[in-house]
Length: 147
Image 1 (tube, rainbow, N blue to C red):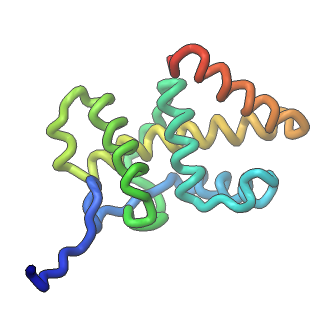
Image 2 (spheres, rainbow, N blue to C red; image 1 turned 180 degrees about the horizontal axis):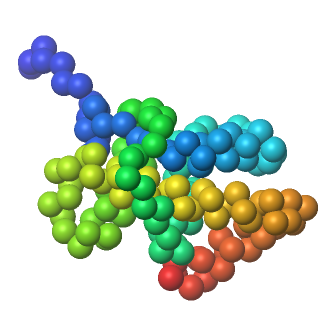
């Protein structure tokens, strides 16, 4: 048996970083501080929620720059990294994207930025019914097979 130690590395590698638009980052911080169900969440959790909303609504925020660095990809579990990778493969229609961690993250960031803005608008339109509305939208999404 070998004494070799191999560093754990997910599909996104271990050197890639993820970013959020500075305006979106402030809105995430506002959501985390204002909404009880989000208070225990981390930035990456709202990133993933924004990613799901952006993909569901097919909304991307196009930016010249990637925004503010939030963290490196090691904060994501293997399953979360594969979720990000699957979005990139779906969007590009090309499995070769799997060897481009930064490109996969850029795609995810565009969806996440747009989805977070949608989530923010949803909350501030009617904060009293936000949780019920979000729950209903999630259930509706499951009913139609995620379409």
